[in-house]
Amino acid sequence: MINATPQESCPAPALSVVVPAYNEAENLRPVIEETLKKLKDSPDLPSFEIIIVDDGSTDETAFVAEYLERQHPEVMIRKHRNNQGYGSALNTGYSVSSGSFVTTLPADGEIPPSEALRLYALRRQADVITSSRSAEDPTIEQTVRPLSRRFLSAGLRYLSIFVLGVDPVGKEGPLLLRGDLARGTELWSRTGLVQIELILKCRKKGCSFGSGQIFFRRRLSGSSKVANLRTIILYLLEMLKVKAMLLLNKPF
Image (cartoon, rainbow, N blue to C red; front, side):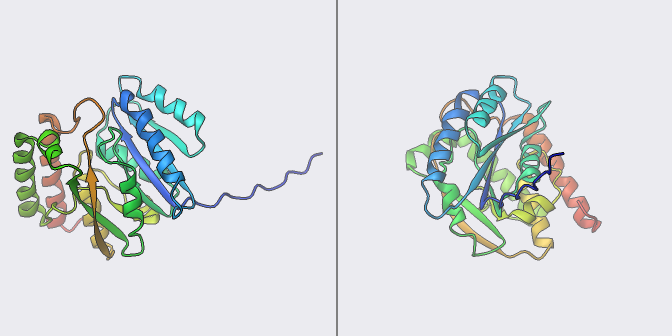
């Protein structure tokens, strides 16, 4: 009879980086490999994990993610059978994370991995760190956020202030938050409203908030999957639902 030796539990990584991905096969590998190099080279980050959430992609995103998972022990993949939206992908990533702190990066390369480290450096400031976005190069703003998208963003901003009492300006970049908050906060928003939902729920828990700034660049290739009519309508409907829950003082 062989006596089994209990395995030592692995210490939790210092940082979990959640990367939601929908039809990003062309961008995913360079983004993850750049992130791995940047995080490994950081003297201030003892350990980390990268969680790719394939949100029901119809291209080769899952194949690329599986390859990266096999090649790098820091990488894991979770899959949605069907496309469920950015918020659902974020919720899945949060729920399986194990880091002391959790943040996100987009799979299109628009936010460099150095910005995850920029937020991580602020971790002792508060329970939740929000971030504002600025372009690395002022000319990028015109390309990444054309006039139509800026007009849409302004409209959604004022709706958020009027309906939810939250000004998203200064909170449009990724969050960094304690891992227990990420894993212990149930999120139901399927769109980008998930970030406002998370802020509201953390505020209700009495969490402290800090803020930082991150810089963005042009996405590596392709176009945004967010700025479309279906997502915008869903965003507005979710905003109204959150407002109703707040008025009724019900958990949401």
